[in-house]
Structures are given as structure tokens and as C-alpha cells.
Amino acid sequence: MNIKGIQFDSEFSFKTSRSGGAGGQNVNKVSTKVELDFDVVNSALLTEEQKAIILSKLYNKVTKDGILQVISQTERNQLGNKEIVIKKFYEMIHKCFVVQKKRRPTKPSKGSKERRLTSKKRDSDIKKLRKKDW
Image 1 (cartoon, one colour):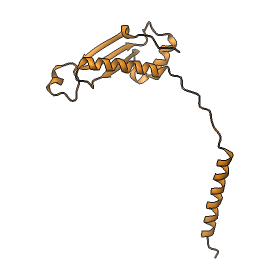
Image 2 (spheres, helix red, strand yellow):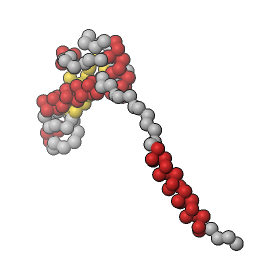
Image 3 (spheres, rainbow, N blue to C red):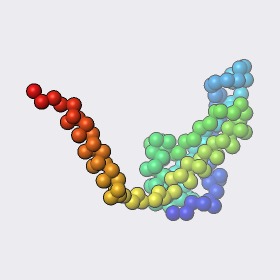
Image 4 (tube, rainbow, N blue to C red):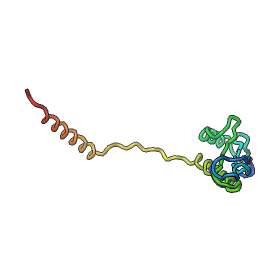
């Protein structure tokens, strides 16, 4: 599943609003919080299979209408937040399509089994010595 090289910028929709947090009087005047909306369901750049993967892996960031929302309000200016939001979006999409390696189950080695059994035997012997015969 190759997603590299696809530029989604044409399908982005941005909203700005006033963000909370540090900034003093500036927070009350300037809309610095940026929200990126990407319509996964109606995207012309993605295949149906890719859409299904994104919707399943990023279900907590996708609305009921199938719109992926990414928000940033860390910077004190709109442009900085916009750059962060775009970067976050591409990182999230990239993580969706990374295929994890299959886990190969391993067995304990012969030596580790022997060491475990000898330590159990030693502990057992120590406990036996603690008992008193009445």
C-alpha cells in the first residue's frame, strides 16, 4: 500500500478560531488555533481500500461524516499552527500504512529451562530445611 508522493493539499479545508492558553491579551483578539479537515470518504486521491484503512485506524479522529480532523493551537501565530497541522496530518497518514512485522513466537532454550528447574529445586530444598519434625 503506497501512499508516498500523494499531495493531499488540494483537499484540505482549514478553520481558524481563538485558542486558549498562554498569550495574554493576544489570545482574545487573534484567531491562532487551526483545524484541518480532510474528507476521507469523498477523497478523489484515495482508493476504497486506503479509505477503509484510514477510517478504521484513525476512528477516534474521524467524525460521523467521514471527515478527519487535526487541530493545533501550540504556536502563537496562525501560520505556525497551520504548518504543524499539515505535518501532523502527513505523519498520521504515513503511520496508517506502515505494515508491522509478524511476531515470531520463540521457545525457551534448553539452558534456560535447566536453570529454572535447578533454582526451583534449590528453593525447595531451602524450604524443606526450615521445617521441623515434631
